[in-house]
Image 1 (cartoon, rainbow, N blue to C red):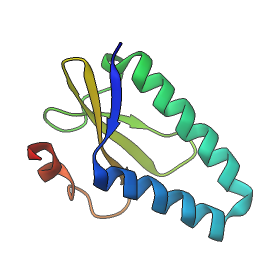
Image 2 (cartoon, helix red, strand yellow; image 1 turned 180 degrees about the vertical axis):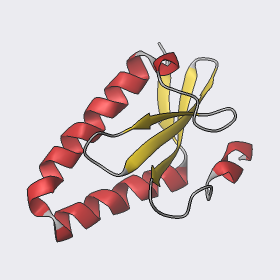
Image 3 (spheres, rainbow, N blue to C red; image 1 turned 45 degrees about the vertical axis):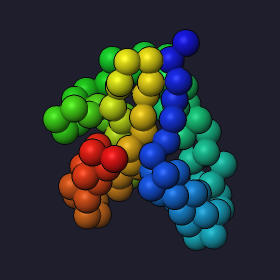
Length: 99
């Protein structure tokens, strides 16, 4: 079975995003968590289904949230490298691919 793992910085981004929604938009918080869990499930089940995002990566674009779940496939492992906001700091995370 393919393993789904997170780069430590991507884990931090997820935690910060959920914290922000819980604090600023509590009415959206539960929906954002459900959408995130659904995205994880879809990527885990069919990692090749999502479009190439940057060289070596694929990206799952959320419907309700302004994020892309950027990941790479390495053998039997899917590594989430970023929860990248679509409107802020583009291109800040590709150096994580080398870690």
